[in-house]
Length: 431
Image (cartoon, rainbow, N blue to C red; front, side, top):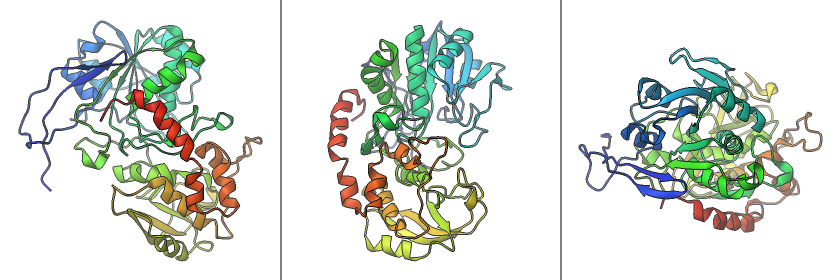
C-alpha cells in the first residue's frame, strides 16, 4: 500500500490550558488527511522554545523519537537551544537493553556523554535526590505508553511528578497518542492492592495519553502526595483523535519494551497481559508473537480451548489452535523451552474487538483445565496472587474461581468505570 502523507501542524498545552501554535508547512499531503505529530515533533519544530534557558533532565527510553527516528536526547545534545543536564532510564533502561523487571544501571551515555541515572522503581525520595544532584530546572517526560495500568512507565511519570513538585521543578510532558485509542475499560485499582504495576486508582485500560494522565494525576493525586500540584506543561499532539489506534496513524513504532514488538501486541496487551497472573500459562514471551500466543504445557492444554472460545463468537476476534516454545518465561521457569499448547489471538476487526472482555473469556475457559493455577508470589504473603495486583482487587479471581461467566465478571466493574469516565473527562485533551 502506498505510504500516506499528511499535513503537519503544531500545538501545546501549557499549565493546563490549550494554546494553539503556528501550523507547520504542508508538503504533499493527501486532501482531508493530516499526519499525526507527537509532542516531540511539535517541540522540535519550535526549536525547543518551551525549554529555552533551562537545565533539562529527560526521562525517556528508545521510544522518545521524532518522525525521523531521531531521539529526543540526541536532538537536545546537538542543539544550542537546550542545556541538557541528565537523562533518567525507566524499566528496560534508557537505551532499552534490559529485559522485563530490569534496568541498565547508572552510568555515562556513550553517544552524548551525559549521566544517565537508573530510575527504574525509584522512590519519591530517590527521584528528589537525582533531580537535585543533576541540577535540573525542568524535567521532560517522553515515553510511548501502551494505555494499560500495569505497564509501568506511567508510574515512573507519576512518582517523578510527585518528586518534581516537592523540590519545585517544572515538569514537561511531550505527549504521544495512546496506541489502543481513547476508550476506558476494565476494573478499578483499589488502595489495598496498589503496587509497582498500579500505584493509584485508575481503571485497567485508562484510554488516556500520558499528557492527559499527567493532568489527571496532577489534579487527583498530587495535592495529597506532594502537598501541591507540579508546575505541569503538556506539549500536545496534533491531528490525533481518540478513536485512532496506532495502526491508523503514520507514526513510527519503536518497541516500548522487548516484548511489545508491534502495534498488534499493544492492541491485545490490555487483556492478555492478565496471563502474567496465571502460573501454568505463558503469555508467549520469547516468541515472535508475545501476548498474542497464549498457552500452557502441551500435556495439560489442547485444541478444545480454541474451539470453546470460537464458539463464543466474541466480537472482532478469532482464535487459532497454536503450539509454540517460549524462549523467555519471565516468572514461570517451568515453561521455559517447553512445548506449549494454546491459542493465537487473531484480531479480525479492531473497531469491535474488546481486549479485556476477550481475556476474561480466555481465563474462564482456561480455568476449566485441571492444570490451571493462579500465580502466587511468596514475597507477598498478605497479597500472594499477582492477578489481584494486575486487576486491582481479588474480585476477578474469586468470581472466576466460583464459576462466574464473562458477563457477570465484566459487569461487576460497570459503576466504577462510569465514575472514572466522569472524573477523567475534564482532563481529556483530544476529541
